[in-house]
Image 1 (tube, rainbow over the protein chains, first blue to last red):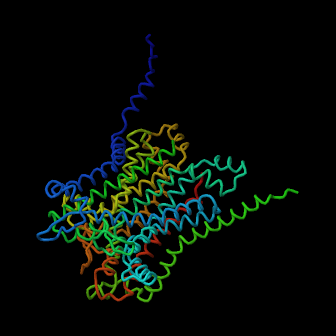
Image 2: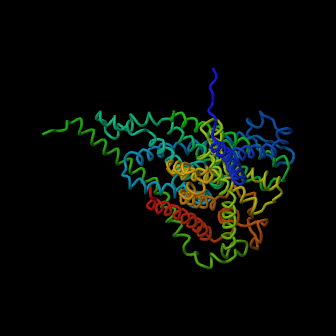
Length: 310
Length: 289
């Protein structure tokens, strides 16, 4: 069947014409906005591209998958016994991250619960501002605190020779990632509809029961994402761990052993390695590993948060 | 009269205890920050003076002041905001005014999230590869600022997006209905109404980048420079880097110096952040809708 479209009046035609011909300036501006919209995609690809570009010769020539990931011998500057094994660095990174999360996740999520569910609105605003301030303390200051304050504290309390070790870095990292965990966790709890709380309270549940039996399951994914983002933050932290871990490449045996992380290795060695050399390229390869890890962590966290919203 | 049962009473007591424990925990979360501030203040205050702020470091950074590092930090922060602000606002405008919910928008959001999550040292590697080497900027203020700008971009996009979304949709509809184009609506309705929020986000980003160290480590910051930067192609010193240098790399620095430097850095960042917080609460009270 054919439907006949009514003939448009001249006025309408003119209007339509006008609408389709935007002024050039407007077109340019809208193009700019669109380009700006894609800027983050372009930038994240550019980061991947340039890191790969610098790491490529290393990946092609000296890279040995088994040695790179499963050898603890990181000795890139040696003259006759060059070895690129990042296992000790990975273990160091995982150790400080894991222990810092043991401290930060329970504390952070409990605080998120308190701020979102139990405290008065006014106190909540104050705490939120305090969290922002806590998040604003730069990592180099945390590193300084690790050296000057926590270092002697650990030496004195545990009677160990050096206080720059995994425990020190974990404490610092925990303090650093707490603000992120608290604010994302609080967002997750806020996102649970009020009807859930009302329904539970109407059934006679106390605030505590509402929190643990209703909100905890309902906001499970968001809280998990908060913990994951905290992990991401701890994994990627550079200056503070560079200053706090004691900087020795080894598989640590206890929390009082010094260690070294992936990020700290790049920060410490990039300045000393000759540009374009194999050592220099291998540091970009470590950067690539870090990039991929952070990509996985962030995409998973995003997936968890999105999944909750559906 | 209604009397609560034993069970209910027990529950109430337990509830109060738990609540108290939780509030105590939250309070203790902020205790370390307070202690750190207090302690920096006590140790660093004796050195802190106008001279310390306006003198050059002398004798291999073991004496003198921190003037060039403050200048350098200002250069870096200002240029990085000049670069990232337009880009961030454009990106946020696209997301809030043009983008439709779809796969493409999802990918953009994911890219922003990942950009925010990339470790700062990876940003430094990117800055080194892209700006210093590929674009031949050399280790310069420009390269370091660009690296900071990339780091700041997700922060600015997120905060701008939030303030754009806070402008009620009915404002836009009213503007469209009197015949304004989408762009005219953005210029005359959306941007003016969200301007305070955007500005607040920018100030916040400035505070964040003032303390950043790892990202500028290899792209434009020198341990020590005997002169102030003359152009954006010079290297510079920065407060954060200076703190790192004198607390780990240089021997013979009097104990109070790094404390005072840390104190200046923290006070700078906290005051920038306070401006952002004050602005937000001021504009919130003045908002008409």
